[in-house]
Structures are given as C-alpha cells and as structure tokens.
Image (cartoon, rainbow, N blue to C red; front, side, top):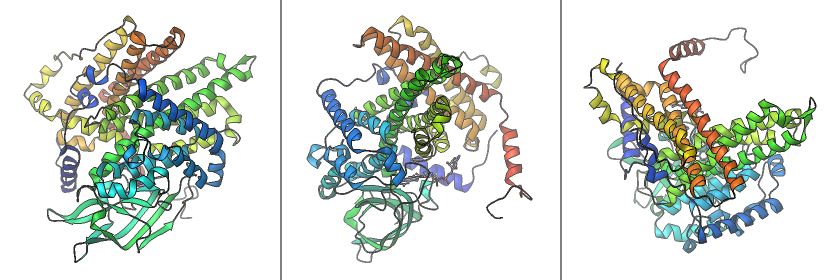
Length: 588
Ligand SMILES: Cc1cc2nc3c(=O)[nH]c(=O)nc-3n(C[C@H](O)[C@H](O)[C@H](O)COP(=O)(O)OP(=O)(O)OC[C@H]3O[C@@H](n4cnc5c(N)ncnc54)[C@H](O)[C@@H]3O)c2cc1C
C-alpha cells in the first residue's frame, strides 16, 4: 500500500528533517522503545533529589506554598480575569520568575527537577498563575537563557527574573496554529543591514499585551528558500509600530492570564536583537517548548493531586443509600484510577526533568508524551472529581467547574494533543526505516513465523516480575507493529493518522509504564519511606501498570481490526453536507 507524496508533503518532510534531525541526535530512552529496546540505565534507578539539591527545593516549595496561601486567590483571579500586579511582584520576590536561571543572571539556579516540584504546587493552587509562570519562565525567559548572546542576557535577564520585566513567546498567528511553520509575519532587512522591519500579526499570546520582552517569530529572506526562513527576534513594546490590538481576550479558562493580540507595522528591530541563529527560529521554538511541556506535566500533576484529595474527601464524607460514597465500587474505581494515573504523571514528570538536568540532548518525544498524557488524564480526573461531588460539584462555590475550564486549555496549548500524538509516532518511527528496509527482504508469509521477543528488563524485586514480563512483551510487540506499519503503508503512513495515533498512544503509555516500573522498583528495593507509605505507593504504581497494559492491549487489537475506513467515509459525507433545515446555525 504505497502512496505518492504531494509536493507540499515533500516540502514538509524536508522541513521536518532539517528541524528535528539536523542537530545532535543521541537516541533518548523513548526513541529506543521503537526499536524494541529498554535502555535500563536511562530510566533506572528512579531519580531522587537528595542533599543540598533537595534542601534548596524544599525551601523553595515551602516559600511558594506560603505565598499561594497568603496571596494567590484563584477564585478572585478567575472572576476578575486578572492576576494582580502584587502577585506578579511577589512571585518575582520569592524567586519563582527565575527559578532555573543561573545566579549570575539573577535567578535561583534551581534544577529542572526542583522547578517542576514548585510548578506542581502552583498548578494545584491556581492554573492561571501556573500558565502565567510557564509563559514567562519556561518559554519566554528560557528562550533568552538558551539562545541569547551574552550581551542580550546581560541586558534582559536580571529584570526578568525579578518580574520587573515580563516575558512572552509569540509564535501563533491567524494562519500559523498547529502548523507553526506557516508563520506569515515578515522581517525584512533594512537597506543599511542594521535592522529588520517586522510586519504582521500574532494572536493568543500569553502575556503578549503586558510583556516588556517578547520573543517574536518572523520570516526572514533566505537564499535557499523563496519563502524565506523563520527567525526569532527580541521585541519590546516601546518600539514604534508595535501595537497591542487586544490586551486580554475573554476566554473559557485560565481567565487570569492576559492573552493578547498583537500587530507589527514596520517595527524596526535592530540586528542585535536576533535570538539564536538566523533562519533557526523554529528550532528555538521547539527547544523551549520542550521545557514548557515538562512544566505543563508538573502543573497538571499538581491539579490532579488536588482533585484526588477532593475526591477522597467527598467520598468519605457524603452518605447516600446508608453508606459513604467511598463504599460504592464505581466510586472506588474513579479514585483508584485517578491515583494510578496521577502517580504515572508524577513519575514521568520527574523522569523527564531529571533527564533535562542530566544534560541529555534529545528529549523531544518524552516531553511531548508527557504533555499529551498528563493533559488527557487531568481532563478525565477533574471530570470524575466533579462527578463524585455530584450536583454540589456543579456549583461555583466548589472549584471543579473552574478546574475543568482551566484544564481544557492543556489539550490545545503548546501543541494540540492529536497533532502531538502523530508527532510522537512519526518521529519515533522515522529512525526505524532502515530496519524496515531489511524486513522488506523477508517474504510476507514468513512474517507470521517471526518470534517477537521483548527486551530484557531488570527485575530487582519479586513484586515486579509480572510487570516486567508484560512491559517487555508490549515493547516487543510495539516495535514489531511499528515496523509492520512502515512496511505496509510506506510513505503513505503520513496519511494514516488513526494508525499513527494508536502507535503514538502505545508508545506514550510504554514510556509512562517504564517510568512507573522504575519508580516502583526503587520504592521496593531501596526506598527510605516507612513500610506502610511505601506499599501504598507500590500498590498505586502497580495498578497503573495493569491499567497501562490493558489500555495498550485494546490499542494493539485496534491496530489489527478497526473500522477506520467507515469513520473516514461517514466523516466525508458529513463534511460535504449542506445542513438544510437544521437546528439554528450561526448563519440563521
Ligand atoms: C489560552 C491560550 C494561550 C496561548 N498562548 C500562546 C502563547 O503564549 N504563544 C503562542 O505562540 N501561542 C499561544 N497559544 C496558541 C496555541 O499554541 C495554539 O492554539 C495551538 O498551537 C493550536 O493551534 P490552533 O489553535 O490554531 O489550532 P488549529 O491548528 O486550528 O487546530 C485545531 C484542531 O484541529 C486539529 N488538528 C490540527 N492539525 C491537525 C493535524 N495535523 N492532525 C490532526 N488534527 C489536527 C486538532 O484537534 C486541533 O486542536 C495559546 C492558545 C490559547 C488558547
């Protein structure tokens, strides 16, 4: 089943190759899963913070908890659709706005691991504040930290870490949403070559209308490409021609953040304000999004923990039919599943953060997996929490409707989840091509006879033997499924999104399961926690592993037998439908 690629697809592939695979490429743990390998040393033992690093993190967490309690009122922020300046100033004063920035540049010099621990607290308390911090620190300031010249860093970073200057990251435009490479904003060099003139529009930019430093993506001329290439620029609102068209767009959730619409009319940006290499703006964007997605994972984990505590509280305190809600099996299930998936979110967040701290070069699919999994799970968990609270959960004196509105953004922002599912599948499978070419030499009828073996997974405790076997079996089956899909569809796999999404989701669950497996093993083998606490976590982690294997089994089955074609046929019929005499439509 081969397909001919369109010119547009060929161009997109070339762009993706340059963007994703032209830098240093050392296979991370997740990419190895596609080859059927479990690189134990990358994921085991489970990372732990100890000593001075732990002390620093504990102190930061204590400060942030106190600040949240005393100064951040999530209900008021949501109702008034505004994070007060005093909160922003306060976050600066306690170091949150420059957590991972080096001390030399005015930051706290915390590890990504500790930063994630802090973001978990903020995410549990107020999603608007978490997204504000994420936009400022994880993507705005981080771009400067990673790609800025020493002069740029000296000029901008200190006031950004204190909150005196707020950062924003401006990529999205009317024609460039999920397709970020379609940026239309242009940056034309001035005749003297000393500056660029920016023209275009950006929308939905967090902090866009309140920021003093914006990383703006614009298209610059390029000798090798008539469409030009995307370059990142540092823009300040005092530059003539910079206009905030809308400072705070009304929105569903995270209402406290200022989401803005911006226009640039001949904004003269000096050449010194180019951030990173010219023409490599998308590389800047993708790199900082890795950090943004990791802290997304942490914020979602915090919010999920908050919901879990509320579920337990209600289940223990509300009685119906002469019993507490917690005595009903279906309520128990919701609680246990929330606990298990939250454990997985937390485990993968800390694994990914530690990976970044270790100086690893390649974690782009880990961060995408973490973002997709944790946002999907939080969405279900807050829905279940509201359900356990019943009618009471529907009223605004309880936090659930706000958490639902807030959590909805996570499935769209920093890469829509469906787009990332396909990204995870295709990036992982891309490197398998060579092995697939080898397989092509095997006659079809021999395929069934191939013995699919899984990788060897270290078993350090009897309690994880079963899980190790399951994990290994599924990693082996997954690698085989990827090779078969590559062989079957060849380049036509690009048009098989349902297949990609299943493979992406299997890979994500295997990554999560690997992190959980590692953590459960560490707890069993050398945990310093009291036995009761330890076994509580072990049981929760083991439940997650069983759930993950069950969910993946369904996905494997779907790969074999599905009705993708019927779905597509029915969708096409509806897409061509005219809706005569339908319910009232926006055009009526
Ligand atoms: C509150 C908020 C804050 C934001 N903050 C920022 C910011 O600070 N900076 C910034 O640059 N951007 C920001 N964004 C923009 C955000 O990153 C984009 O919304 C996101 O990338 C998706 O783009 P889009 O909304 O245009 O969706 P579209 O590209 O129009 O896609 C809509 C839907 O179509 C589907 N879809 C699209 N493409 C595919 C595909 N290839 N395969 C399958 N399905 C597909 C997905 O389900 C997707 O959700 C923000 C957005 C919001 C809502």
